[in-house]
Length: 278
Image (cartoon, rainbow, N blue to C red; front, side, top):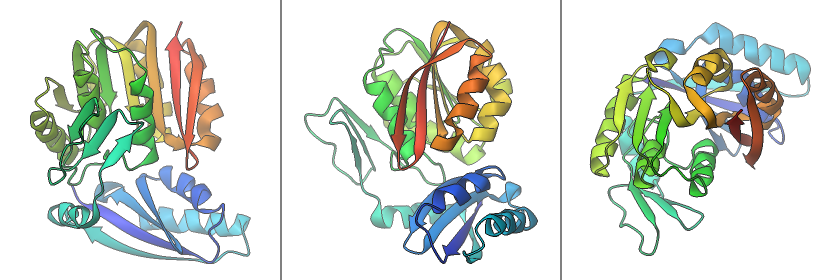
């Protein structure tokens, strides 16, 4: 699947990037990279809509009349993504316990978990705060002997770590065919037994002790009831993929299904939650 990369240039960026990015999440954008004069935003080709982007920008300027915004969009071909990524891809060390690296990096000694990831067009390299935060949560989560779901799995890095931590059954689901193929590749690279599926919340067919959903806010709200029905009593739900202003909205939604918030992490205005089902 191809992606649109849209460059947003703002006359002022302090405190505004995150607000505009949150609005763009609502129309299908799923990843962002800050730049000196704004940010880059990424959206799957089939979700890209110029009119919706114009509406978001107009509404944003109406609320911030002193700001000017310009945009420039290009198509990112699948075969070129990995090339660009390899030019400057650094490995990521999470709390001295998990080292996420590319095939061209050497594993790190004296780290409990080395995970080799080749992301290609899939998101989930531990560079983005949302993935990083779930990896942090998993450090202290006892998944040994438990059944784990990684919904919106991207590269499969979270599922791979769960299996390395001796989870019983681990499943990874993504609705992007490229992410599905990439997760299969990364599972094989790390020699772990993870079931990878192409699908969405409707693909769920069993119940889990630990359920990870690293997706955007709107999909989380849309599918929360379905997720809940596949989480065992006293099961743990990890949520990420949204900004800190969205925390209350999501917490109020999951409370409907008997979940209690136990911990929140924040990184660069992105939030991640650990919740437990009563």
